[in-house]
Image 1 (cartoon, rainbow over the protein chains, first blue to last red):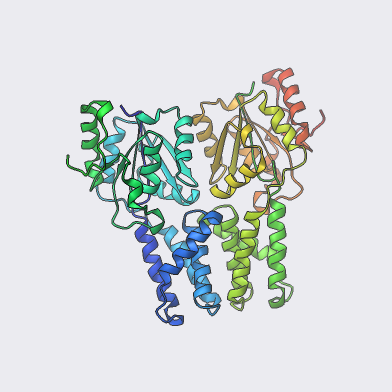
Image 2 (tube, rainbow over the protein chains, first blue to last red):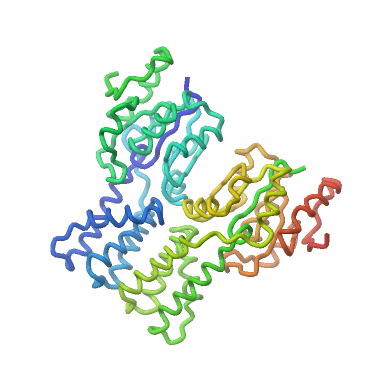
Length: 247
Length: 247
């Protein structure tokens, strides 16, 4: 039924947003002496959104946006030492061990025993590769695709490259915007496993998901059971709208 | 004879180092008021070399290194406005049109008519994709591989992924270190087309090339003729050591 099952990486297999979030706290602490309670997170998000077309996703892009935010919010009073601190935050993020989410190691090993697995992640090439190397999961993935963005076109290109029919492709991830909606739109199947922390940029208007057909699991540990159930059902009758994990 | 011909991108197909070089000049001008003739380029190169394991290649990595260099060289006197200027340099680099090298458009079209072409480039995912999109060459490349680094293992992984025998693979590029030596080491063939500007990091000890067998062309325009000559020769007798472009 599935010729290929693909997983998102950040906040699907391992912690990621929590690392960014902790770094934003460090930034707010660094800038606090200059600011009169200004909302550093909100301003940073504005800067990041404006910079994505230039710098894309990942730690380096985030760092350049932190620097720009620090300069703007302090009206130029941030010192060189502050800026150097921000660059050190980035290096600390890169040095962090990859922290797998609960149940991931077992689920990936189990699904890999019966399916060809692919990792599809966006962000920085070097950083994502490093996280995968440190994760201990690399051996389970037959293919790794690190992409600049996850759009319908991205998935179409990948499926056509690997000669996989969209109907026989299952994507698992924590972002409706990047992992679920574009896959469903091109005729693939998708499993949404929400993470408690979701970056604002990945949020979608609930209306956009209204007509999308995908599966939703509370915990990735339920994935093997969902896949088994799908195999038992008629392939043509497999998708239940916004199905919560009732299995 | 060749199941796949791959091209490097930066300074093989389009100008790249000149853009970095021009930006280094802007950095030196920005810092000149603080410095007593210090060698900004040398110091920047040291910072870049130290940062590559963290930040990899590309404009964002270069920018973070420019910022660190500015802070260190001015002993913290660089202002927020200076740092913001450096980030603007980066955005200017990203906004630059892709400037093809002389003869490239014709050569790529001609070789693509008879061979499957691949682009193998290292650097930043988004930036390299953007340059390719702007280059007008995307249609000629059946496959695009943007990689974190170009080592023997990188090429082995790519060839195994595309099921191409190394002996039937030809790589064309301007870096002995990244495009030529690792390809030759795994049994592939390589064409070295030097560019007038080569980043220090890409330079190799001449001794390392002494026993390597590859072709060298003065101009990429000579590539179709070289390929034609290779087809005429006995495949087993095809590689002439350090051959200068005599054809």
